[in-house]
Image (cartoon, rainbow, N blue to C red; front, side, top):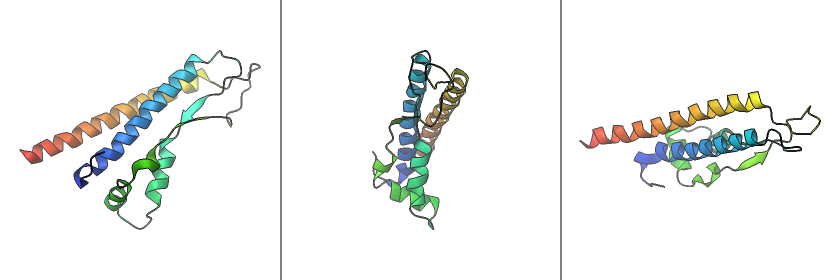
Length: 131
């Protein structure tokens, strides 16, 4: 983690990209286990963690929220969880739906690409300023 204000948004986007990469791996694992009897799908929820952390300082600007969030990014650490609420209608009790997982995978791949592009653009802006 870089500790200057210039990198506040980059640090958050880095955490988001890490979570997105983790979610892609989890979804790929779900697709690999589509025929495993009793398998319950896994997922990663970064959005809720980000909303929770940004919502702690209710009446501040986004810049102040991000700056205060950068002092301790541990609240943005996420892990995979078992999606037990997604009930299965299959006889083998597997709750992975191939179509849903493929849509989620495509969406997550786009999100990851957007995040990495945004991080690169932030660095490009800094390069322009430094010239």
